[in-house]
Amino acid sequence: MTDPIADYLTRLRNAIKARHRIVEIPASNIKKEITKVLFDKGYIQNYKFDDSSVQGTIKIALKYNPVTKQPAIVKLERISKPGLRKYKGADELPRVLNGLGVAILSTSKGVITDKEARTLNVGGEVLCYVY
Image (cartoon, rainbow, N blue to C red; front, side):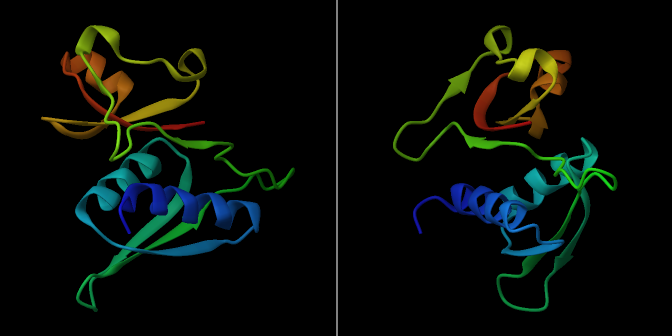
């Protein structure tokens, strides 16, 4: 596998389309940080890191609207790819859906959202858009 973050996003996308409650994903440090950001912004219900095996896994409980059964995550889009990295400075950070969505960035301050990067005045690699 050449792009583990794209695999992570694809597993989430497929689980949402299949209306699964829980999805299990092989763990890595960057995937754990992205999961924490998704939880903090309210896109997933809960998560659990299981380090019993060598690589470990991430179990993510997906979030759906209790009345309409619509998922909290409408779209996950990978931006920076291994073949073409996308870096943005602090003054040119993207706004996703005019501020309604979030862009997840990998910066020198860790994996954070575009709004947090603006307040910290740091730029970095734009990993993905979530809305």
